[in-house]
Length: 289
Image 1 (cartoon, rainbow, N blue to C red):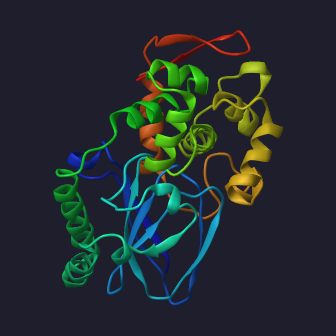
Image 2 (image 1 turned 90 degrees about the horizontal axis):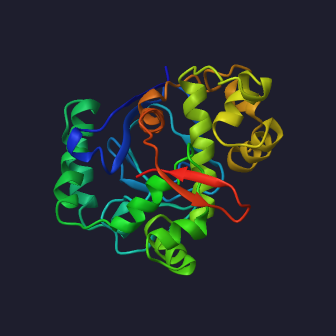
């Protein structure tokens, strides 16, 4: 029987890793639809080579063989295993980690030797923690990612100015460290925000007399439900109804993604007053750090 369990990472990795997971397939192969999250994923099949999934700009379909166990790490945007390549070279790609990281072979051996998938996941996290202690993370990109979270829309040019960068400099640094432009990342995170609200069973705020998916779309920053539907089709290849199985509070695959979406909701709950930024349209937006 196929199963998928997410959990938070070890505390020392929480600033870089969004969630960790274990997936098992049953007697039949499993068709997995991967969605854009803004970050990369490390997937390590027990007994197989570690794979790196680069940042996605659209859905990626993978057929996972039967009787397979995988452990995985889903990174925050702007965080990734130590790599010689910039991330815009890895967009929409799935490649063997050994091509990019010298530790990959030893990681594969350690995971294969672990007694249980839970211990294998611990091995992967411990190896990553040792590497991250020696690898600097671009602080300006980290600040940009936090500002681009969905709950407080921000104008990209204003964000660049606040970071003392030109718009082209911000774009270049995001392409290198995230794999996508700030605008594409903002759209991806907005959709992830909608999914976070849906997964948590959050009630819509009731603005504009909307409820259900329409209300959550507005709460996540979409103009209306039609706007959400267009973005959902572009990012997932499915309509919101197909993706969520007709229910607002779950996805059609039946997996529980609460551990993955909790960072989005906690950020929304603790938004401070923020910094007002005047947009090109003349309105004032607030964004947070």
